[in-house]
Picture 1: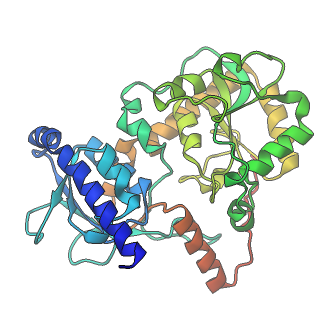
Picture 2: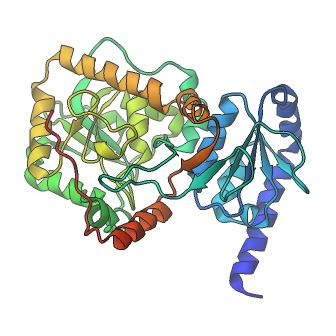
Length: 376
């Protein structure tokens, strides 16, 4: 038997086992949520991984009863494992789909009102994607543990005036060429090497959380998770100690969940890819944006020179952006304004990056894509 079939059989059995293990909990949840609206997820192949899981978490948060229609390839995939292993809010529907539902989300065209999932996520310059683009979220763990049930971190007092980073600093994993070759952004490895070579006097790379403020005069603080892991339940509070967050690229695309987590913690991001957020972050309002090494140096100097009042005003703007665009309520409300009909552009990470590369070839667009001016 071919290896891919054996793998699918294994994941199918594992994922269904997790579903059955949580059946009693799911029954209790169903009694409290079935009074709401029902959304049916009919997806043949999960090419969106955790981003689809997060979208379903958003729907459940906003009172939808989530039903996943039984599809062999969808269940028999490692990409669906976290959904089946970690979430208990959905039901499986076997057999024909005759039950009433308010909303259908599918990965192909269907009769009647529905949202069609699309891997095309990164628009080319001058090209507007029709439909709705789901914004970049936090990592799924933050929604599962209920981080947003507490207020957003926007205290009136000032924090440490520094650009903080916590996350994965694996040199090989974060040296892939896609962020640079497709989007014109530094890879994570390139950005950190640039900081170490050109801003060594500002760098503090502590051994653990207890030492992140050990060298006050050094205002670029990098803490790799290989030194100390900060669990999701504690991360927002650690981020909230700092005024700014240095937001490097992810593995295959500039966007990364740690940017959004930092924004929900009230940090002002310093980043090269403000234009890839939806809507774009505005330089000097919700972020400090840069295009190259020279503008990065200017952004770090601006961070140091800003008044307390300017920092607080930017933090409030970050908070407003999160409330209006990034919360589950904001995202689901935006989907509802489409009449629950049309294309739904959902991030597929590598699959979406490959799609934009394909689109560039078709249109004869030479990479990398330009980064808009950061002048404000």
